[in-house]
Image (cartoon, rainbow, N blue to C red; front, side):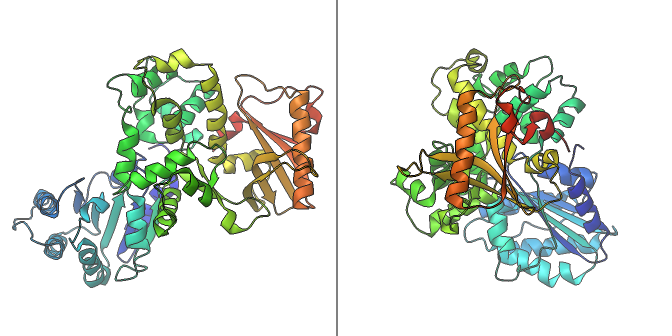
Length: 472
């Protein structure tokens, strides 16, 4: 198994525990949750079951009964979830295994309207499982918000009952590189970076890459061919995560139009069908929990001025190249390489890759052991102070230094010219003046291949390259 060392250790510790454990594994669709659990336990469970998508309660109970039959249960189909969990108790009591591992996958799908599923789960854990010392209950699901709202934030019988939370994150660049190498796919680091900018770190997407095809050919095959495996992934992704995905897609679509992100007020102004109520708050929280957007503060401003930015690479790729694509060109990607739309996307996508690899950036800067906060900053033009300015990444360090990071994607070493040099100096001066910050300000360049050390290079304090992002 590539990566997941910490998560494997957490699952094994739960198995070795001297008391019953309740583990929740959650994360976005296709990130490898089920694979992780099955691999750690060698595909052997006292009981395992997966909920049915878009199915009624009766169908869910029939499927549950089928899973019980797989482990030898002879009873009838339950008429309620309370009865269904009582049947599971009978299976556990008959098991002779030292630790009874119960794996319930895609649990959010099982909570159909008026099914009282959560109440039955509460009763099973509180009245039976937690009273024993030999049960490891693992629940799993792609609908992250269901697990957070119904299990973690439960104010009833499940309050504080989960003993281990595992939020399975997408692969890093390093893990994608190792994954590709194990599958004997021959891609350069630059190609891997482009692949990450398209697909993010979702292992399932990477598993679809074919040997013998270049990365660009693979992208055409997956996204632009008539029967491409990921051609319709966008709608399936959001539908699998959210029961009513329409509001979520509206917010995502709004954020997809503004690269630097939007405040809550700007999101509302962008779409008349969105309302300023608790629903929007919940949508924004859910999207943040699921890793599609990030919430960041403008340094020096109050929390209510928070900005929301789309950071999911796959979603950004969809909005740039798939949403309005009417060309039906099965070789669209290879035909548009190095065009203006492609080059603009490269810059935006590379910025998002950098935000997903803050730890590696800090390591490259030699500040991994220094506490820091990540901000963004912008200021409007004024007659008194001068032109407006924006800095997409600020690393505000506890050692009285702020790294002002400029991110640039290039197919070769990046050369700072006089225009950019003047712009960087202006940004630095405007930041110092408008924030009244007394920390040392270090201009920092994050590029794909490093900088040409020309006459304008001298003001740069630190450099980070794409190769640095591939570190563990």
